[in-house]
Length: 427
Image (cartoon, rainbow, N blue to C red; front, side):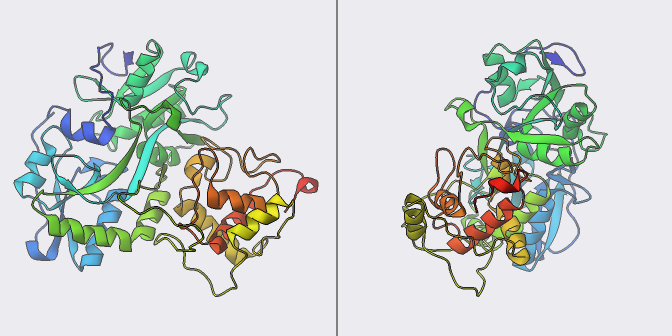
């Protein structure tokens, strides 16, 4: 493996640590940082510790998505955000949160044992980033084309610790064509983590494999169109985790604050999810914790779903499934309805459908939804509805997560993305 700045160095394997955890636990301090909290009464402030130069997560100008989410939570408490700025290096939590200089740290892996963590507010995954016009489609470390490409990965710290993608590649013998980029880079430059994505856009490397939020955000900033494709879940193993639930951290003694934040995260889930979508964060819904088994045909709505309209509900999933079994087609009541299609697009984003199927349905880890032959859900909208609600193969079912009315609207939106011949339309 070649390092982008300092030549070849051996990297210690960290098979099951995610980027965020490594940022807090595995990296030596590069320089001592002074801390400063905005002026104001502590009791009226939502006190957050954050890195002042770490987009897309946070910066001193408060342009990161964690900054925006902190504003949402502070507003829910009737407070203003007050920051303690500190570079995320070894000892970050010890020197900030656990030293009493703030009360909350954003963006920690759920369950990290140094602090008390809230319920997760998003889940993301490592992702491939490569040009849209590339003659290859990447989603797995087992793709043989990776042996032919120049592949960029993040190395973490001055000892060039391996990130999970680097370890996955080396385990497959893919080493000589891998280029390492420091996740910190030159801290005097703005947004050091984004340099690896700039390298993809500038054709210095063919693809980068990075933590999803970094890939999604910086891909949007490039003049060259880039694809961001989550790494296949089949590449994950107990010793190599690639997707992580992300939560807020508070001191272990702050159980009351944790409970308050959990309530706010639930209350503002849709707003938080939209922030993540706007920043291009690829991911899936957080894993449920301790929830009861879902009951079929309840029609219950998820807090993140858009409110149901006053229009009449459609047929039940059972009826839709029976119609599909009988070879009958039920017309989608929202086909061609502009208002419903807009709502369907928002739901498509809020439910993170794009993380598998692409922002415009072009496919990625999941199949292309714009062509004439869907790999899954082929046929009438009734058959597609049944699949959306019950799931199929790797696709989860959304029965009890969204209403059938909302599912019809998502399908109506997806149909607008169709690029095939009109003569093949079955809906």
